[in-house]
Image (cartoon, rainbow, N blue to C red; front, side, top):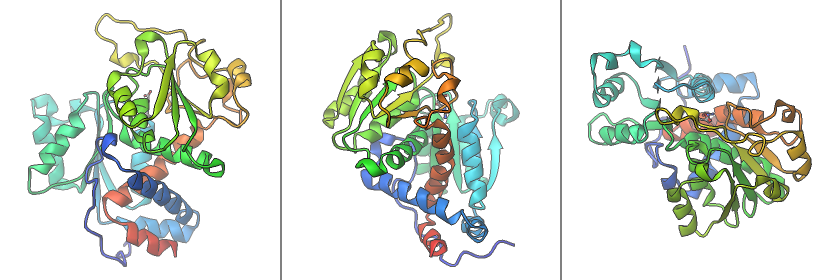
Length: 339
Ligand code: NCD
Protein backbone atom coordinates (compact mmCIF):
# COMPACT_ATOMS: atom_id res chain seq x y z
CA UNK A 1 0.00 0.00 0.00
CA UNK A 2 1.50 3.35 -0.95
CA UNK A 3 1.77 5.76 1.99
CA UNK A 4 -0.76 8.60 2.26
CA UNK A 5 0.81 11.88 1.11
CA UNK A 6 1.78 13.96 4.17
CA UNK A 7 0.63 17.23 2.60
CA UNK A 8 -2.83 17.48 1.00
CA UNK A 9 -2.87 18.38 -2.72
CA UNK A 10 -2.87 22.11 -3.47
CA UNK A 11 -5.59 23.68 -5.64
CA UNK A 12 -4.64 23.54 -9.31
CA UNK A 13 -2.88 26.66 -10.64
CA UNK A 14 -2.56 28.28 -14.05
CA UNK A 15 -1.77 27.18 -16.67
CA UNK A 16 -4.47 24.62 -16.03
CA UNK A 17 -4.13 22.98 -19.46
CA UNK A 18 -0.76 22.62 -21.20
CA UNK A 19 -1.75 23.48 -24.74
CA UNK A 20 -0.27 26.63 -26.16
CA UNK A 21 3.36 27.58 -25.47
CA UNK A 22 2.57 31.14 -26.47
CA UNK A 23 0.66 31.54 -23.21
CA UNK A 24 3.45 30.29 -20.90
CA UNK A 25 5.18 32.86 -18.71
CA UNK A 26 8.85 32.98 -17.83
CA UNK A 27 8.09 32.21 -14.16
CA UNK A 28 6.33 29.01 -15.27
CA UNK A 29 9.40 27.98 -17.32
CA UNK A 30 11.70 28.64 -14.38
CA UNK A 31 9.40 26.69 -12.05
CA UNK A 32 9.35 23.67 -14.37
CA UNK A 33 13.15 23.71 -14.71
CA UNK A 34 13.61 23.92 -10.93
CA UNK A 35 11.04 21.16 -10.31
CA UNK A 36 12.71 18.88 -12.88
CA UNK A 37 16.05 19.32 -11.12
CA UNK A 38 14.39 18.65 -7.74
CA UNK A 39 12.60 15.45 -8.86
CA UNK A 40 15.80 14.19 -10.37
CA UNK A 41 17.73 14.88 -7.16
CA UNK A 42 15.10 13.11 -5.02
CA UNK A 43 15.13 10.13 -7.43
CA UNK A 44 18.83 9.54 -6.81
CA UNK A 45 18.19 7.53 -3.64
CA UNK A 46 15.97 4.47 -3.17
CA UNK A 47 14.19 6.20 -0.32
CA UNK A 48 13.56 9.19 -2.58
CA UNK A 49 12.24 6.97 -5.38
CA UNK A 50 9.82 5.27 -2.99
CA UNK A 51 8.71 8.67 -1.72
CA UNK A 52 8.09 9.84 -5.30
CA UNK A 53 5.97 6.78 -5.93
CA UNK A 54 3.58 7.85 -3.18
CA UNK A 55 3.46 11.45 -4.41
CA UNK A 56 0.54 11.08 -6.83
CA UNK A 57 -0.43 7.46 -6.24
CA UNK A 58 -4.08 8.46 -5.85
CA UNK A 59 -4.20 9.85 -9.40
CA UNK A 60 -4.86 8.30 -12.80
CA UNK A 61 -3.79 9.49 -16.23
CA UNK A 62 -5.07 8.76 -19.73
CA UNK A 63 -2.46 8.56 -22.47
CA UNK A 64 -4.38 9.11 -25.68
CA UNK A 65 -1.77 8.88 -28.42
CA UNK A 66 -3.31 8.33 -31.83
CA UNK A 67 -0.20 9.52 -33.69
CA UNK A 68 3.06 7.53 -33.60
CA UNK A 69 5.32 8.29 -30.66
CA UNK A 70 8.24 6.63 -28.93
CA UNK A 71 9.96 9.18 -26.69
CA UNK A 72 7.01 11.36 -25.76
CA UNK A 73 4.85 8.33 -24.94
CA UNK A 74 7.55 6.48 -23.01
CA UNK A 75 8.73 9.53 -21.12
CA UNK A 76 5.19 10.47 -20.07
CA UNK A 77 4.36 6.86 -19.19
CA UNK A 78 7.53 6.51 -17.12
CA UNK A 79 7.13 9.93 -15.55
CA UNK A 80 3.67 8.75 -14.40
CA UNK A 81 5.18 5.54 -13.00
CA UNK A 82 7.90 7.46 -11.15
CA UNK A 83 5.16 9.48 -9.40
CA UNK A 84 2.87 6.51 -8.74
CA UNK A 85 0.22 7.74 -11.23
CA UNK A 86 -1.69 4.85 -12.78
CA UNK A 87 -2.09 5.01 -16.54
CA UNK A 88 -4.56 3.89 -19.20
CA UNK A 89 -3.75 4.22 -22.85
CA UNK A 90 -5.21 4.29 -26.33
CA UNK A 91 -2.58 4.30 -29.04
CA UNK A 92 -4.51 2.84 -31.91
CA UNK A 93 -7.85 4.51 -32.66
CA UNK A 94 -8.98 1.33 -34.45
CA UNK A 95 -9.29 -0.28 -31.00
CA UNK A 96 -11.47 2.52 -29.57
CA UNK A 97 -15.07 3.51 -30.19
CA UNK A 98 -13.85 6.09 -32.70
CA UNK A 99 -14.29 3.35 -35.31
CA UNK A 100 -17.97 3.30 -34.37
CA UNK A 101 -18.09 6.99 -35.18
CA UNK A 102 -17.74 8.37 -31.64
CA UNK A 103 -16.80 12.06 -31.72
CA UNK A 104 -13.64 13.46 -30.15
CA UNK A 105 -15.83 15.34 -27.67
CA UNK A 106 -17.59 12.16 -26.55
CA UNK A 107 -14.31 10.22 -26.35
CA UNK A 108 -12.62 12.89 -24.24
CA UNK A 109 -15.66 13.23 -22.02
CA UNK A 110 -15.60 9.47 -21.51
CA UNK A 111 -11.92 9.46 -20.53
CA UNK A 112 -12.67 12.22 -18.07
CA UNK A 113 -15.09 9.90 -16.27
CA UNK A 114 -12.22 7.59 -15.32
CA UNK A 115 -9.02 9.59 -14.90
CA UNK A 116 -7.63 12.83 -13.43
CA UNK A 117 -5.57 14.13 -16.38
CA UNK A 118 -5.58 13.51 -20.14
CA UNK A 119 -2.33 13.57 -22.11
CA UNK A 120 -2.94 13.50 -25.85
CA UNK A 121 -1.11 13.43 -29.16
CA UNK A 122 -2.82 13.61 -32.51
CA UNK A 123 -1.99 14.30 -36.13
CA UNK A 124 -4.65 16.99 -36.24
CA UNK A 125 -3.65 20.56 -35.38
CA UNK A 126 -5.80 22.16 -32.71
CA UNK A 127 -7.31 18.92 -31.39
CA UNK A 128 -5.86 19.24 -27.87
CA UNK A 129 -7.11 22.83 -27.74
CA UNK A 130 -10.58 21.58 -28.69
CA UNK A 131 -10.42 18.97 -25.91
CA UNK A 132 -9.39 21.69 -23.44
CA UNK A 133 -12.32 23.89 -24.50
CA UNK A 134 -14.65 20.96 -23.94
CA UNK A 135 -13.19 20.42 -20.46
CA UNK A 136 -13.75 24.09 -19.66
CA UNK A 137 -17.42 23.68 -20.47
CA UNK A 138 -18.22 20.67 -18.27
CA UNK A 139 -18.49 20.19 -14.52
CA UNK A 140 -15.75 17.54 -14.30
CA UNK A 141 -13.00 19.76 -15.67
CA UNK A 142 -9.68 17.94 -16.09
CA UNK A 143 -6.32 19.22 -17.28
CA UNK A 144 -5.45 18.40 -20.89
CA UNK A 145 -1.78 18.12 -21.85
CA UNK A 146 -0.89 18.53 -25.51
CA UNK A 147 1.78 15.95 -26.31
CA UNK A 148 1.96 17.06 -29.95
CA UNK A 149 -0.82 18.38 -32.19
CA UNK A 150 0.00 17.79 -35.86
CA UNK A 151 2.53 20.21 -37.37
CA UNK A 152 1.20 22.83 -35.00
CA UNK A 153 2.62 22.69 -31.45
CA UNK A 154 4.57 20.42 -29.09
CA UNK A 155 4.64 22.36 -25.83
CA UNK A 156 6.12 19.66 -23.59
CA UNK A 157 9.00 19.07 -26.01
CA UNK A 158 9.66 22.82 -25.93
CA UNK A 159 9.78 22.69 -22.12
CA UNK A 160 12.33 19.90 -22.14
CA UNK A 161 14.32 21.75 -24.79
CA UNK A 162 14.37 24.85 -22.58
CA UNK A 163 15.51 22.70 -19.65
CA UNK A 164 18.30 21.20 -21.78
CA UNK A 165 19.44 24.65 -22.97
CA UNK A 166 19.20 26.03 -19.45
CA UNK A 167 21.37 23.26 -18.00
CA UNK A 168 23.85 23.40 -20.87
CA UNK A 169 24.36 27.15 -20.47
CA UNK A 170 24.16 27.22 -16.67
CA UNK A 171 27.85 28.11 -16.34
CA UNK A 172 27.75 30.51 -19.28
CA UNK A 173 25.18 33.06 -18.16
CA UNK A 174 22.06 31.07 -19.10
CA UNK A 175 20.07 31.04 -22.33
CA UNK A 176 20.03 34.85 -22.48
CA UNK A 177 22.19 36.28 -25.26
CA UNK A 178 22.87 32.95 -26.97
CA UNK A 179 22.76 32.41 -30.73
CA UNK A 180 20.62 29.41 -31.53
CA UNK A 181 20.41 27.87 -35.00
CA UNK A 182 17.41 25.81 -36.08
CA UNK A 183 17.90 23.67 -39.14
CA UNK A 184 15.75 21.44 -41.36
CA UNK A 185 12.01 21.30 -41.99
CA UNK A 186 11.12 24.41 -40.01
CA UNK A 187 7.79 24.84 -41.79
CA UNK A 188 6.29 21.60 -40.48
CA UNK A 189 8.45 20.83 -37.46
CA UNK A 190 6.27 21.51 -34.42
CA UNK A 191 9.17 21.28 -31.97
CA UNK A 192 11.00 24.31 -33.38
CA UNK A 193 7.78 26.29 -33.66
CA UNK A 194 6.95 25.70 -30.00
CA UNK A 195 10.52 26.33 -28.88
CA UNK A 196 10.56 29.73 -30.62
CA UNK A 197 7.52 30.74 -28.59
CA UNK A 198 9.38 29.95 -25.36
CA UNK A 199 12.71 31.47 -26.38
CA UNK A 200 11.11 34.88 -26.61
CA UNK A 201 11.32 34.97 -22.79
CA UNK A 202 15.15 35.04 -22.88
CA UNK A 203 16.42 38.55 -23.65
CA UNK A 204 19.24 38.82 -26.14
CA UNK A 205 18.62 35.43 -27.76
CA UNK A 206 19.34 35.45 -31.50
CA UNK A 207 17.77 32.85 -33.76
CA UNK A 208 19.15 31.72 -37.09
CA UNK A 209 16.78 29.69 -39.26
CA UNK A 210 18.70 27.41 -41.62
CA UNK A 211 16.43 25.75 -44.19
CA UNK A 212 15.72 25.44 -47.89
CA UNK A 213 13.34 28.23 -48.99
CA UNK A 214 10.30 25.95 -49.18
CA UNK A 215 10.81 24.73 -45.58
CA UNK A 216 11.16 28.16 -43.93
CA UNK A 217 9.83 28.96 -40.49
CA UNK A 218 6.22 30.10 -40.85
CA UNK A 219 5.13 33.71 -40.67
CA UNK A 220 3.09 33.33 -37.45
CA UNK A 221 6.21 32.39 -35.45
CA UNK A 222 8.29 35.15 -37.05
CA UNK A 223 5.59 37.68 -36.22
CA UNK A 224 5.64 36.59 -32.56
CA UNK A 225 9.44 36.93 -32.46
CA UNK A 226 9.33 40.39 -34.03
CA UNK A 227 6.62 41.48 -31.62
CA UNK A 228 8.87 40.50 -28.71
CA UNK A 229 11.99 42.05 -30.27
CA UNK A 230 13.78 38.70 -30.64
CA UNK A 231 16.36 38.99 -33.39
CA UNK A 232 16.28 36.35 -36.12
CA UNK A 233 17.50 35.79 -39.64
CA UNK A 234 17.12 33.01 -42.17
CA UNK A 235 19.39 31.51 -44.76
CA UNK A 236 19.55 28.59 -47.14
CA UNK A 237 23.36 28.59 -46.82
CA UNK A 238 23.81 26.93 -43.40
CA UNK A 239 27.54 26.31 -43.84
CA UNK A 240 28.30 30.00 -43.25
CA UNK A 241 26.12 30.19 -40.14
CA UNK A 242 27.48 27.16 -38.26
CA UNK A 243 30.65 28.71 -36.79
CA UNK A 244 28.76 31.44 -34.89
CA UNK A 245 26.23 29.23 -33.10
CA UNK A 246 26.03 28.46 -29.37
CA UNK A 247 23.43 25.77 -30.08
CA UNK A 248 22.23 23.99 -33.19
CA UNK A 249 18.76 22.43 -33.09
CA UNK A 250 18.36 19.97 -35.96
CA UNK A 251 15.07 18.61 -37.23
CA UNK A 252 14.15 15.90 -39.71
CA UNK A 253 12.01 16.14 -42.82
CA UNK A 254 8.40 15.80 -41.63
CA UNK A 255 7.30 13.69 -44.60
CA UNK A 256 4.19 12.42 -42.78
CA UNK A 257 2.67 15.84 -43.51
CA UNK A 258 3.31 15.67 -47.28
CA UNK A 259 0.13 16.42 -49.18
CA UNK A 260 -1.24 13.55 -51.32
CA UNK A 261 1.11 13.10 -54.28
CA UNK A 262 3.77 15.34 -52.68
CA UNK A 263 7.21 13.91 -52.06
CA UNK A 264 9.01 16.77 -50.32
CA UNK A 265 12.82 16.51 -50.23
CA UNK A 266 15.81 18.54 -49.24
CA UNK A 267 19.52 18.05 -49.48
CA UNK A 268 20.49 16.40 -46.20
CA UNK A 269 24.14 16.93 -46.87
CA UNK A 270 23.58 20.71 -46.83
CA UNK A 271 20.91 20.79 -44.13
CA UNK A 272 22.42 18.25 -41.81
CA UNK A 273 25.60 17.63 -39.87
CA UNK A 274 28.43 15.14 -39.87
CA UNK A 275 32.13 15.27 -38.99
CA UNK A 276 32.91 18.13 -41.46
CA UNK A 277 30.24 20.43 -40.06
CA UNK A 278 31.24 19.50 -36.50
CA UNK A 279 34.76 20.65 -37.25
CA UNK A 280 33.42 24.10 -38.18
CA UNK A 281 31.31 24.56 -35.05
CA UNK A 282 32.34 26.25 -31.80
CA UNK A 283 34.16 23.90 -29.42
CA UNK A 284 31.51 24.60 -26.75
CA UNK A 285 28.41 24.69 -28.97
CA UNK A 286 25.69 22.13 -28.23
CA UNK A 287 23.81 19.99 -30.74
CA UNK A 288 20.18 19.18 -30.08
CA UNK A 289 17.62 17.09 -31.96
CA UNK A 290 14.12 16.09 -30.80
CA UNK A 291 14.61 12.67 -32.45
CA UNK A 292 13.86 10.44 -34.26
CA UNK A 293 16.72 11.29 -36.59
CA UNK A 294 16.81 11.01 -40.32
CA UNK A 295 19.83 11.30 -42.62
CA UNK A 296 20.38 14.90 -41.42
CA UNK A 297 22.20 13.72 -38.29
CA UNK A 298 25.19 11.50 -38.97
CA UNK A 299 25.58 8.87 -36.18
CA UNK A 300 29.27 9.78 -36.08
CA UNK A 301 28.20 12.96 -34.25
CA UNK A 302 26.93 10.85 -31.32
CA UNK A 303 30.30 10.48 -29.64
CA UNK A 304 31.15 14.17 -29.80
CA UNK A 305 30.86 15.83 -26.36
CA UNK A 306 28.75 18.57 -27.98
CA UNK A 307 26.00 16.07 -28.88
CA UNK A 308 23.24 16.74 -26.38
CA UNK A 309 20.32 14.82 -27.88
CA UNK A 310 20.52 11.67 -25.76
CA UNK A 311 20.65 13.80 -22.64
CA UNK A 312 17.82 15.92 -24.06
CA UNK A 313 15.76 12.74 -24.48
CA UNK A 314 16.39 11.72 -20.84
CA UNK A 315 15.60 15.23 -19.66
CA UNK A 316 12.19 14.71 -21.25
CA UNK A 317 11.14 12.23 -18.58
CA UNK A 318 12.17 14.51 -15.68
CA UNK A 319 10.56 17.56 -17.22
CA UNK A 320 7.33 15.64 -17.80
CA UNK A 321 7.41 14.42 -14.20
CA UNK A 322 7.91 18.05 -13.13
CA UNK A 323 4.99 19.11 -15.30
CA UNK A 324 2.69 16.45 -13.81
CA UNK A 325 3.68 17.58 -10.30
CA UNK A 326 2.97 21.20 -11.24
CA UNK A 327 -0.31 20.53 -13.04
CA UNK A 328 -1.60 18.13 -10.37
CA UNK A 329 -0.52 20.43 -7.54
CA UNK A 330 2.06 18.28 -5.71
CA UNK A 331 4.93 20.81 -5.42
CA UNK A 332 4.67 21.09 -1.63
CA UNK A 333 4.82 17.30 -1.25
CA UNK A 334 7.89 17.20 -3.46
CA UNK A 335 9.55 19.85 -1.30
CA UNK A 336 8.81 17.69 1.78
CA UNK A 337 10.56 14.75 0.10
CA UNK A 338 13.54 16.88 -0.79
CA UNK A 339 14.14 17.93 2.83
C1 NCD B 1 9.17 15.08 -32.43
C2 NCD B 1 7.69 15.11 -32.75
O1 NCD B 1 6.99 14.13 -32.59
O2 NCD B 1 7.25 16.18 -33.16
N1 NCD B 1 9.55 13.94 -31.75
C3 NCD B 1 9.40 13.91 -30.40
O3 NCD B 1 8.36 14.18 -29.85
N2 NCD B 1 10.51 13.62 -29.71
C4 NCD B 1 10.02 15.37 -33.61
C5 NCD B 1 9.85 14.58 -34.85
O4 NCD B 1 9.07 13.63 -34.91
O5 NCD B 1 10.53 14.92 -35.80
